[in-house]
Amino acid sequence: MRHIIACILFITVALAAYPASPESPDTATISTHFPTPALYIDTAGFADIHNVKPKKNIIEKIIAYFNESNKPKKNKKFDFSVIGGPHYSSDTKFGVGVVAAGIYRTDTVATPQSDVAIYLDATTSMFFKLGIRGTNIFPHDKARLHYDINISSVKSKFWGIGYDMDVNDDNESDYKYLNSQATVSYVWRLAPSFFIGPFASFDYTNARKQDKPWLWEGQADRTLNVGVGFTVQYDTRDILTNAFKGLFIRLDQRFNPRFLANRYAFSLTELTFNYYRHVWRDATLAFQLHSRLTYGNTPWSLLSTLGGSYTMRGYYEGRYRDKSEIDVCLELRQHIWRRNGLALWVGAGTVFPKFSDIRWRKVLPNYGIGYRWEFKKRVNIRLDLGFGRHQTGFIFSINEAF
Image (tube, rainbow, N blue to C red; front, side):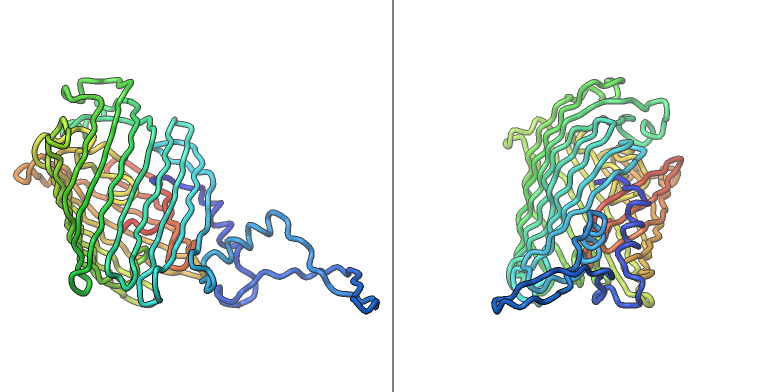
């Protein structure tokens, strides 16, 4: 998801969820101070007066819910919570979003925790998206299942294909599209921290009501692509959803051949390199190098793009698109107080048809600041304000960008 929830909502809930006493968030509880007497008749027939706590009203229940949401539930095999509210984005305008997040283990505490998130969003700009994503880690971390499945209906903007078209504000045009996509990979652990396995993808996009159809350069409005391939991963992160230390390297190789009924046959190589390091008290320095390269007859709907919730935050998702892209980001994450934290990042990226066409003037800057609230243990709700070249964007999402 790529939107902003109203800052007031989260900060109010985050601060209200803590008692005024100096108790730690792991031991603090909300208590009532005005018990009411009630008559109780025991089996021996004697009357006794007991204190009965009054029922919480809806506001107290909400505060108590968020106050407990990040505390480990030792007796719960599946720890699941829901958060939602209004938001505003320059891309999608006003809307309401809901995120339900769960963490669980398939084995003992020696096995990293698995995670799942279900998200739903609808806005006044005719944007709708429903999806589920997560990682299931099998017992003893012998295998991992990664998945991301979603459907959406979007009113968006299109500037064309290639940096020179995309940077021209006069090319801005409106269009609508329907999209459904799924990516699934299953990897086995061949050695400590080293995984390899198959990868499959499905993508259907149907564009309609284009203001400037010539920007599509004659490509079909409707595209359907099925891809297969493999993924190789090296992962030493201490936790997947909010790493404090470790290294993560992922290489995806995907093929969309004609014999799988693809009208547009192409191949895709995607590389992700992440590094995390503790720098001082309650601070983590996170670095990401990411590149997505396509070869062959890549359809417009699967071109590499910049912007969105995870890379080059602040740029309109899909404005800059071409056959390939590369981006880099350095982020400092600092825990501030209780369940609150801040993040600062700087980065850069560009799109290009081939490496020989990369030019310094086409490299786009990126920087921003974010607020973090620990929704569950080591699972953050993030509120990011990103800046780019003549662009600003707000993002509300769950888990870190990388």
